[in-house]
Amino acid sequence: MSQNYRTVNFKEKELIIFDLDGTLIDSVPDLTLAITKMLSHYNLLPLMMDQVVHFVGNGVKPLVKRSLECAMPDKQVSNEFLEEAVEIYFSAYREKPCQETYLYPGVLETLKYLHEKGYKMVICTNKPYELIEPILEKLSIKPFFKCWIGEASLPEKKPNAAPLLYLANVTNTRIEKCVMIGDSKNDILAAQNAGMENIAVSYGYNYNENIADYNPTLVVNHFSELLELF
Image (cartoon, rainbow, N blue to C red; front, side, top):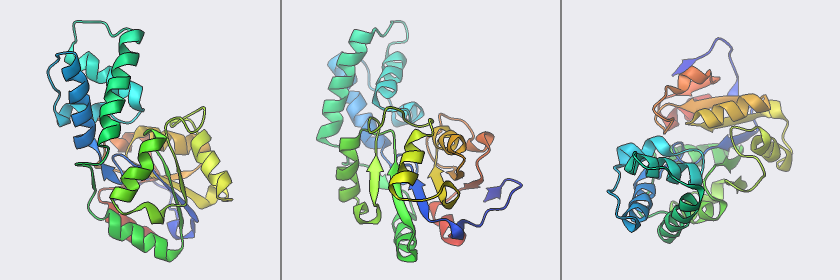
């Protein structure tokens, strides 16, 4: 566990805002399956999980665009082509959003602990809204969360501050009583833009960048380290 110079008492927080992919769950296996189906539609070679993982975090369209650019580096991805590919990908992913997706180690017991402690917990993700609930249900963590917002829930998404400010507002929580927990620079930047303390997990999908470079309030290497903080 590493920390910046300022010390924060996280036990005094009231609202914990979690990212989903790369923080609570590893969804890359299922994302890769859907990407592979999309690519096969165009007779393109499949991508491996260790390639797709670097394309995750900004929503569906950037994921598909980056995957296409990787699969056919010598060709231009037109807007029309991209729109069609997004539909094919999303159709495949919607069919099986949680076949091989799994919770990271320590997530279930830590969420139980935080719930029992009385913290309000919500999810702020750039994943499409309609897929959030089925995944939470399949992984048996839905009851821990008061609400969640996804890619198109608001006009702006992370790293914009708007989703975090919205969640603070709907849960009637002051910003200084909120904390954002995520794996990506989108999470850290959104929290910083909202004036909110934040915790980065080092094991996620941060575009092959070191999350500590974005100066989060704190970095943890394992989700269960939150047990010591809250």
